[in-house]
Length: 131
Image 1: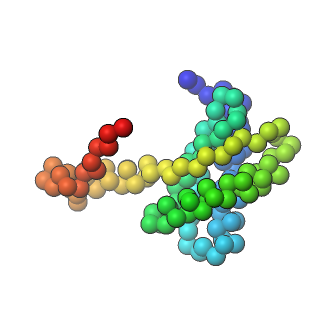
Image 2 (image 1 turned 30 degrees about the vertical axis):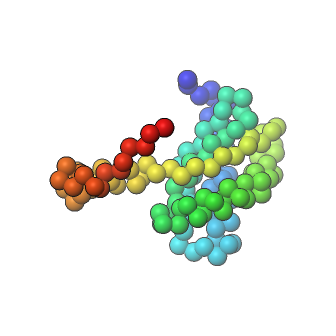
C-alpha cells in the first residue's frame, strides 16, 4: 500500500532530525571515525510506530552500536520530541534496524567482478534460513 503524504512528511522530518541526534551522540560518546546514516524511515498508517533503518560504517561496529541505540531509544525519542514539538502532536515509537543493503550490493559487485564466485565456491553463499 502506498504511503500517504502525511506519512512521508513525518518520515522525512524524523529522518532529518535523527541524523543530527545520532551523529552528535556518537561524537559526544567518543566514537570517532564512526558514520551513522539513517537510510530510511517508515511510519505506520496510524503514525504510532516509526521503523528506522540505519547504515553504520564500519560494519564491524554495527551490532554493538545498534544495541546501544536500542537501549537509549527513550532518550532519543525525547530528544526528537523536543525538536519536532511544533510539527508533531505525538512522537511515534521508534524501532531501529540495520540496513544491510550496501553490504548486499557490495557482495553482488564482487560476484560480478569475479572476485568471489559463488558457482565455483558455494561456501561463500549465505545459507537460507527457514522461517
